[in-house]
Length: 484
Ligand code: AMP
Ligand code: MG
Image (cartoon, rainbow, N blue to C red):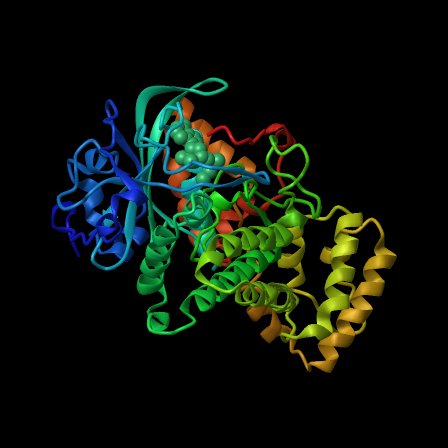
């Protein structure tokens, strides 16, 4: 395990030609203080967890003091925002410190302006930093691919949004922060060589088996199609809405990336829009799989200078079935059933009655883990949640029949189901309580409590039971938008 000073950087992105990035230094923040340090991620990247106590921890993790060997840059990218191409975005407030020699990249989000800031301040507010920190770790706990988060550093520096807030820096960790938009920018500029250089770089780092293949570019695209399909299936199965699925927020590795106005479903509402700025509902919960496909089409288009259009079409064509297969398998597992298409009517039937009865998605599935399949069992804890009990009874008859066919044993199924149906998710109000304590009382204990809780979302953690409840009334008044 390393100290901050002995981390070894290889900085491969910075070895690419300068067309891909700008060299920048983080802008110092006044009085930085460490708000939270994620020892799991520290261990993951080879940083000794005890470095949280290092006298310079807050300085290193805010960018105030340079990490030896880091070579800070801001990456260039473009992207389709709400369906419209924007020709230059880029890391406007993120600084890639560098890549460690074990492949993990360290990025400071909110580290001050860069050449891509487009007139904005380059900062991130404490509120959105806490949300991203907790949610990326919650997603990891849920087994969903995501960028990770190492730390939050706060500062009294004022940041002007709808209200005056204070600045914070999130240290993010990922194998790559390359986005679909990182390719789009060179396609639209007609810079085919740069496109090829970037594709070769990504393939060499992440798909080394393809390096020598004559059809490496279509096969690379195919990998991105598959990982994106898998990610969308995870989001839909767990009930996660990202909120801003612009192509600049789509990871080339199929990771959940750039947490903004995200939200988990409370009661099951397929048309759920978590982002208050998304007036048309382009990124509503039930649109996500299609938007995933639309975004992949933008990536495929950007890669057409490197492949025949037929090859790009073929790669895209695998999306619908890849998505459907993953989604059905995940949903079947949530029902305690074997993978396969046989459960499709049961899944759609259940979602329909959950919607009509406005049942909480997470709480229902967790309660279903304890379903008693004996013919005379009432299953009152489940049944009583429904207004329309007859609809529940009809569905249950069908469910029992499936369980019978698969010779399902209750105790065995319960254990398996509790490993895929979380008890705890990061509901907005939980994040909001942690944010208010941090902001108003400089009390960061709730951030750390949630971090610990959400690391193990499938464990009972009986003393934390209150965190598994439906949201309080005031939660409906929390407004999440792109402002961050
Ligand atoms: P987002 O919607 O957060 O994914 O950001 C879209 C683009 O705006 C990216 O290029 C960001 O780097 C940039 N951006 C967002 N907020 C800021 C900010 N406060 N300062 C500079 N750039 C920003
Ligand atoms: Mg973004």
